[in-house]
Length: 293
Image 1 (cartoon, rainbow, N blue to C red):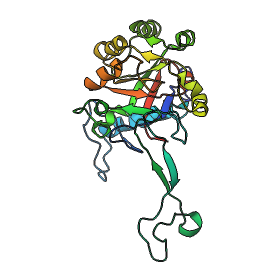
Image 2 (image 1 turned 60 degrees about the horizontal axis):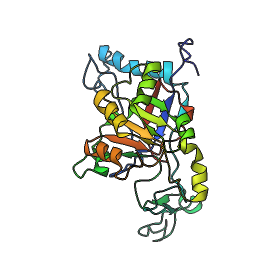
Image 3 (image 1 turned 135 degrees about the vertical axis):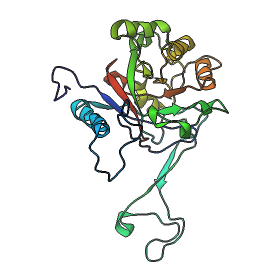
Image 4 (image 1 turned 90 degrees about the vertical axis):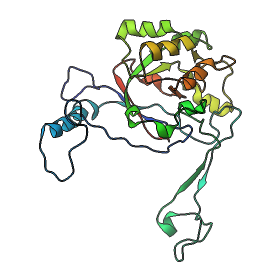
């Protein structure tokens, strides 16, 4: 799609609904941000009626939304949490049902009864998760590091980031256990420029495109693509990215899961179980980390 205000430039694709689970997980989260560089550190006080440069700067993000994001293409990169979904063998399946009343409310609902449209005017669902390592997930350091940050410790600045998609799908098609390398990142840079500092770098392998088959078969393939430790170290230490992500549910298939171990013990995040990366451009998009589905 193209921007309505700048028809010669393609509008960026804003990628939405990245699942934020693990450790202290959040079902839904919201963040607010505004332009404050070289203006003010806080938004104008409510009810002041102030029309200042700071207010104009804050409105510049609204203008950016209208110009670039209102008509942008939005792609969901998450897998839905559903019965029978692909999981590591060590975890149990999620359970779904109707919420029941903990106590009776006279004239409204009996203890233990389920809520319904006819009787109470609404319904409420109940979801039981045996693990937070499920579906599309954001792993914080606390997943492996007992002193590491949990999801609750993450600042709202992680909410919106430049997105880099490194495509290794052709190599994976030829070698299902292919491991992404520094050379793959440098090849991306040769075409698109340096990886932006603070970016989210997701590796497209197309592994997730067979998610439905894994769902039917009830298990995942033993051989899967990974991201090598040298590539992870290069991205964090030489490009200062925020996080990397991949489509399989593990970073690599080494005996010690060396990539994930290094990330968590060095206080880095990672995304696992990303989906639909084949619908996303390699450069120019934004990643929005939002709510579970």
